[in-house]
Length: 405
Ligand SMILES: Cc1cc2nc3c(=O)[nH]c(=O)nc-3n(C[C@H](O)[C@H](O)[C@H](O)COP(=O)(O)OP(=O)(O)OC[C@H]3O[C@@H](n4cnc5c(N)ncnc54)[C@H](O)[C@@H]3O)c2cc1C
Image (spheres, helix red, strand yellow):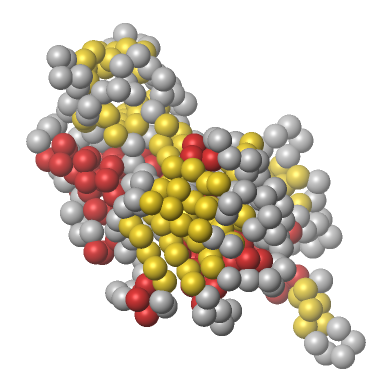
């Protein structure tokens, strides 16, 4: 059996590791555009200079050699011929018997006239992006970040560490809007502003001006404001990196369509990680890589833990965790507990915890993930929600054994 994996990120590398852990000595080939193994989560620390390229790697030195895995870095897959079980890439082709597609996602620059083609506009997804941002940022003070989600703020955090004062433009009226409520986000807003970041919230870029070398020189916002800029970081959205499947018969709908075994519609072809659009976070990509590998090796394993509604945020040493929804709907009950250093919000719906935000001390927060994920009915527990602990969900069986109740 020969395994070919496209993508050397969280999902692809984990899959290769899992295949070996299952005792298989069969041939494994990994193809990736990346020519250096790196964690996307740490790209900000490369921009700021806190880590060098080697410090971004998430595998030990010699990992591929020790595991007898053939990794072809700099190999971009152009198409997959599923009839002949062949992968075609820029340097040749590779036959497979089992194929895993774990190509992650790509940044999408908003379709604003001139912005996509401009020479000084970058996303923040790959090491090549981080290198370009670091290089350009070293020579300019006029930097605009479009999007105040986690990726945009990762860039902002790195730039303020470089002594820059980037302007962050966000169409919504709060930062980190998909992960935190306004109250929790405001704690970060304050810290970013103190560090020199300038925010334009509830504001959209409506026009860009380019010079003769096709570089953006200024931007106009929908409030009429116009600012100079020499570097733009676009962090508004991403899309699964699956364009090379366009002429294949692998079914895609947003991301690659998979069943619960992470198998695609084509026999022997599996998909994992951000390319499936099932989730967009590192731990889930790893888990999917591992599950797909088990199925590829003939150990049927369902991907059941598709719980993607958990996010952690950590800037300036302030930690937050959000699980489930962050804003209540009509009929929900909200409980808030806060002091100078901590903030906790729980949203209750029909006797269950539909969402929680914990900021400050996030230790012991596993209970909230457990409650949200399992939709446990807590209405029978006679205790304030904030005081719940795992102990409240243990029952003692007749034989003395502890069991989740
Ligand atoms: C700036 C930033 C910060 C983040 N922070 C966090 C965080 O704090 N916590 C968290 O959980 N998640 C975070 N994420 C998200 C996390 O990095 C992703 O969910 C995770 O990397 C997805 O893993 P993956 O294996 O699916 O894809 P990736 O890690 O993106 O790997 C994709 C691989 O596919 C390769 N590839 C793509 N197209 C081709 C092709 N055509 N041919 C060959 N190879 C190809 C790439 O070269 C790469 O090796 C962050 C992401 C970014 C960009």
